[in-house]
Structure formats: C-alpha cells, structure tokens
Image (cartoon, rainbow, N blue to C red; front, side, top):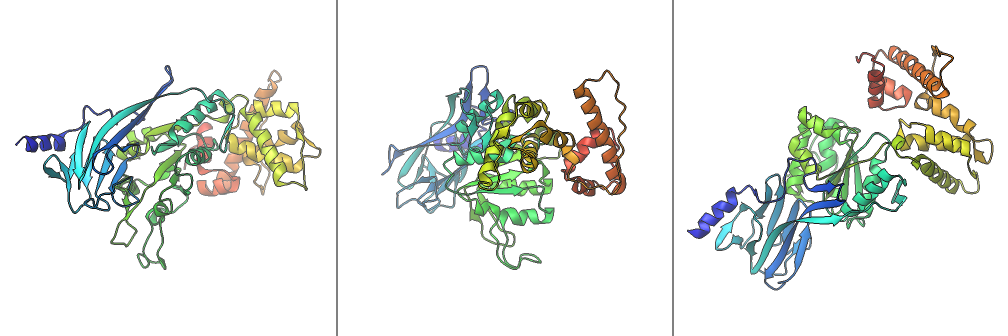
Length: 479
C-alpha cells in the first residue's frame, strides 16, 4: 500500500521542490551579473547497484537515453537491460522517467512504472541495475574573458568579452541557445563558436534558414521525406535533423518559422525522435539546437505569433549580441582583420599595407546600421578600388554615405532636397543628406514597383525587414 501511495505521489508531483521554472526568460540558466555567478541547471545520475556501480553522469540535456545500445547517453552493460530501455525527459514541469517499451520494465521499488515525475534522490531499477537521480544547480564563477577573438568572432570590447565568457561556459553543455541581435552582428558566427567548443565539434553543424524555404517545404527539409510522399518526391531524403545527428542544428531567422509548423518542431525536441514525411517508422536523433533571430520572441509569444512552449524549450539560454556601434574599438579591430584576410586570399595578386589613421577614425565614428556585415562589405570594396598601398578616407567616404543603396542602377535620377542650415555641423549635415537620399530613393522604388516590398528589397539589395524599418522611420504608409 505504501508503494502505491508513493507511486501516486510521483505521478502527480509537479516537482515544486525542483529548481526548474519556466517563469523566467532563461529558465535553465541564470546569470547574476552583480556577483558574476552563472547558474546552470543540470541533473546527476549515479549507478548505485550493478556491474557499473559507482559510475556517475551529469547532463544538461532535455532527453537522456538509458539502455544497452551504444547511442544511449548512459550505456548499461547488463544483459537484462533493453537496447533503449528508458528515457529521462526535462519539460516545463520538471523531469519525467519514461519506460521505452522495455522487455523487463522500469521499476521504482516493487512497482513497474511507465511515465512518472522524478523527485530528488529517487532510485529506479532497470534489469539488475539501479540508478539514482538528483537534480542540481551548478554555480560557476564567471570572469570577463581576456580574449580579443573567440573562434570566428572578433572584438575586444567589454560586451564581446562577456559574450566570449558566456559561450565558453555554455558550449560544453547541451543546453539549447537562442542568439539575438540585429542583422549583421554575427549570430551564425556565435553559433559556430559554440559548436566548435562543444563535445559535438567532430560532427556537423547544419544550418537552416527558416525564412528562405517555402512554407510547404519546411517540414520536408527539417524531417526528411520518403520517395513518393508527395508530388516531386522522386527519392528518399534525409532531413536536417538526421543530417545533424550527433552534432548541432542551427535555426536561423527562428522568428520567421510559421506557427502551424512549430508544434512539429516542439514534438521533435521533446521526444528526441522524428518521422519523415510519408514514413511509418520514427528515427531517434541526438541534436543540439541553436537558434538565431533579430526579433523579440518574448513579444511574439505575448502576441500569439510564437508558441510559448517552443520558446521555453529553445530559450534555455539567451545570448544577446551587441550592435557594432556600441562596441568601442571593435570596428577598427575587425576592419584590420578583414584586411589581413583579403591580403591572404589575394596573395601574389594584390596587397594593401594598412588603413590610414584618418580612415580608421572614420570607421570608428560611423554608426554601422548594417553592423559587421556592412563593415566587411565596405572593406572589401575599398580594398578592391584603393589606388595606393593604403586605404584612405577617400576610399571609404563615398561607400559609407551611400552603402545601403549603392548596388542599384536607377533608370532615372533621384533628386535630393538638401535644405541644410549654415550652422549645421559636418555630422548633422551628413545625416540630413543621407536621410534626404533615403526618403527620395525609397519613394522612387516604391513608386517604380507599385509598393511591392519584395521587388523593392531585391532592387535595393537589402532585406525586406530593412525596407519596412526605413518606411517606419520616415513614416511612410505600409501598403
């Protein structure tokens, strides 16, 4: 009777004493900036009886597989244990122990269980092996990194040094991460840094741009399809989850993922299994998911445009990349890095010694609306067209003033309304000229393409979202 009462307690418990919570923005990781303490939620599983007694494992994964198969996270050398015997899932209510249709069952005491909530220091038995479960909060002292580069990320500013530290601490775990930042801040590079520093680095990091694939093909791209599953499926296709098995899946532009497809992604993350379109069998996958967005997903959740449960599943950690204009000194450091890279790529054909002090000052003073991506493009162009062995201010000024729209050929002139008071400073005058150009230029393209935003973005060579931002900035009516 006591065992049955105990089982009921386990099945109904919502783990109130467990430290996990979905009420905070980053519910698996909390960073106390005042005390420089990083708190990471993990769980410890120790084998307390059996041939492997004394072995202990620590995880920060959402799905932990236990069994005799080599792909299990905890491989048990016990003839009475099934290949995939049971799983431990972390969800919004805590940790659950789920029997995976094992031959000999999963037991708590004398009771065979199928799906129960785990409480701290609970022992459970599979075959002749007994394991003990214990949730933990790992507290890590965090000091600002002394690096000026981490993997593909470049920058020695205070903001980037803090980012490096966070990446270094989190990379070895399996926590899902969302990287937020403006367009061009290097979100994919940060994902690469996390992957390269993780235990998954020998496997692939697969990239999927949620905004670049037609909605009706996203499911097939992520989960794969069988031959003949739909019109045009002429062969079996392994989806990106399968391709990333054992490695990392990077979901770029996560905020663009259609809401009707979000439940399928959530299901794959919760269960650790996927099913190809048109298939009957499921496939087990072991993938760490890193996502990136320039949108505020928390706001989208409140607006009903993004599923709350998926957000919490993916946002175990949120890393915010700062815009380049706030990173003092980094524009110069990054520009010199790009110059060295270009010299190496063009070895024997072209060599630029460096960038003049005046040009460096100009780079540092620019506000960089396109962030690092804009800086890279400007240095590449200046490198190509420079008339001497140094990049001078003259090689930059035209590009800096017209960069956002200089890839377009106009069929007719765009007139500028330059009403500039004599008392204006150089900076104010330049801002007025740019604003006047942007307004006239954007109005010209909107008229030319009959307010078709996609056509405007293609013609201007900029992202649709940037077109919308400019229209909002200058209070132009959105069609």
